[in-house]
Amino acid sequence: MIRIDKLIAQRGDFSLGPIDLDLGNSSYLTVLGPSGSGKTLFLETCMGLIAPKSGRVWLDGQDVTRIAPEQRHISYLPQDLALFPHLDVRENILFGAKRRQLDKDLTGSRLVSLLDLLDLHGIIDRKEVGTLSGGEKQRVALARALLPKPRLLFLDEPFSALDAKIKRQLQIKLREINQQLGVTILHVTHDQEEAFMLGEQMAVMIRGQLRQLGARDDIYYRPATLDVARFLRNQNIFDMTIEEVLPDGSLQLGQAIRLSAPGYAGAEKGQRLAAGIRSEEVVIIRPNKPIGPELQANLFEAAVSDILAFGGTHTLCVKLNGSDVTVDVELPNCAMRDLGYAIGDTLRVCLRKRSLWTLPRDNAAFKGGLDDPL
Amino acid sequence: MPQRDTVFKITMLLPLIILTSYFLLLVGSQSAFFSLSGFIEQLSQSDIRSAITLSLVAATLSSGVAVGVAIPSAYALARFDFPCKRLVDTFIDLPMVLTPIALGTLILMSWNTAIGRTLSSIGLTLPFTLAGVILAQFTVVVAISVRMLKATFEQVNPRQEQVARLLGCSAFGGFIHVTLPLAKRGILAAIILTWARAVGEFGATVMVAGTAKGQTATLPSSIYLAMSVADLPRAVTLVVILIGISLLVLFGVRMVLERNR
Image 1 (cartoon, one colour):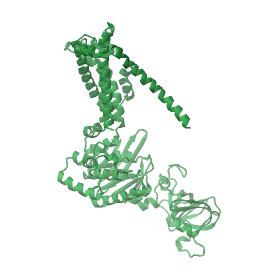
Image 2 (cartoon, one colour; image 1 turned 90 degrees about the vertical axis):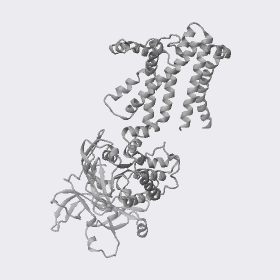
Image 3 (spheres, chains in turn cyan, red; image 1 turned 60 degrees about the vertical axis):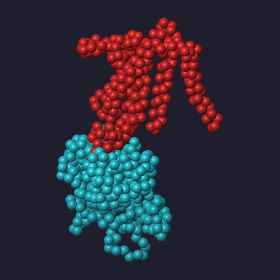
Image 4 (cartoon, helix red, strand yellow; image 1 turned 180 degrees about the horizontal axis):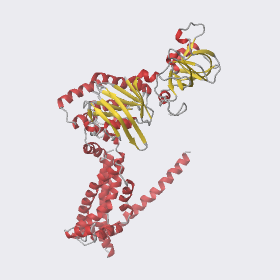
């Protein structure tokens, strides 16, 4: 469907790329990145609104790098939707079909099915798009984008201005559109929940580069670079040294604490690395309860140094005994209520080996060191 | 706090009241010299009717050309980056800060260059011709038009143009189907104000085309001529006509802006 080869673009001082990407038919890719990471520039370059400095964009096997945007058959839903205020709702939706001079009968039947799918029958005859609610505007903009039957749909943070309930409804609707209409979707967002919920494939873009591309669990649990780990809110990251590479390939790590961690190709004794674990993967060992073999390693006595309450979860900040290391442990509210921890309480925690990820320090992934801010 | 608010309101309103009174005084003072029968009698004179016609025709043509040139120029300034853009942007403002007499001088001097002489040789002469009046008015008003339209185009969301491109419009198509309709209000306001400024233009027109009665004498230059020979009834009649046109135009602008809000 879309293939991007070593794409490099520039806007002012900001450089994008080189970016390589291959996206198949009917797939849904979310590109997640912080604000200012180049997501919109990436879309604009793929759509032909900005000429790349170098690299190629292919659509269905055709090199479209030098082809005008209107000939690429990509639809675009920008953050502000960019509805046309001088046109009524119907004219907005039909804009693309009219400009492309599509067959009227086919357009009519497709319009009806889109009105059904997006529940637009009640507002299709409204005269002013400015009077629509946020959710209605989103649906009108989606219908406008989908009516000309695009090869690809590009979404640029389309739900950022909506309240949570409508946002969720539209996210579900987008999944339906992807599955029912078979439209290939490339969706950029800074919203991690949205990216993980929608993207069957995911990419993380930081400072103009696709740092990681893969399945959502890979990205969530096995960040490819330190800045991806930090951006995805990995709170527990430790500066470690390999003390020993065990015969089974796993690693014995040491420095402020000692950890047993999964190995990686090229691991050598003495090598420095970063190891991390997501706060919801840290296990609290209940007293007097038997523990399985996978929880026998990386066990620590600890004391609760702080408790942070969020909406549906609590984070316990626990200081590991005999070190200055503090580990965040995330608990759902119900578990927190059952356990009833208070500051100063002691407990045992396990940094489960299979949940640990490691990144060698000499790797290109280890950008800027542990304290490099995003 | 409410007392401070009142003081604040009075501080802001007082200058407005003084200003409005001053303008009312200016306009009202004409009534001492104005009579309806005198007005009708003056209107029956052919050179006054000719001045009115010339002013309206020349202003329509010059503002039409000015807006026609200003739309693409303003769009280019609002949307594109090109070498020396800041310099070009500043240079285009020159007629707005230069006195019209100086502008008229510049036009006349330019007609003494090779290009000017070539144009003269094919019959495009400026003194005492309609072409001279139009060129003078165009030169004065085009910068205003560019400035207003640039601000208008800057207010049009470029994303809407980009979405139009991706929905199948060429660059020209996007401009016609999206940018122009969205800029309609600003364009109409620019047309009306450019036209009004052209109707009132005096300095450059007198310098370039002169004030030949029945030929190049516009409303403003006819007022000047009437005052120079102390013909007050004639001057007042012309002033009243200009005030009428100006009020109509200002009212028109307001109506257009209100209706398209």
